[in-house]
Image (tube, rainbow, N blue to C red; front, side, top):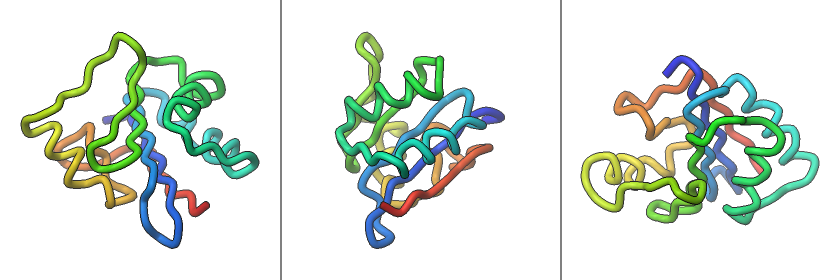
Length: 113
């Protein structure tokens, strides 16, 4: 949990994308600044932007809806079970970190776009 981070993209207070990283969460503000300067909404483009500009780890998930997940090629994401349910059920909570059952992340931001 020490370096995990989340960035929720919201419109009128409603989450429409959530970026969840398992490492280098301290860099989440750089990603928020890049998105504020030039918004990107496509999940694959968000994944590439996250990797290119901020995070050099592969533990990144782009969540584009309660059950819509984008991860790096070769990575797997659970399609059922308690982990999947936590991600699904907490998507609309902009500060909740679904990687962690307690929902906390050392670095968590919300960006209204």
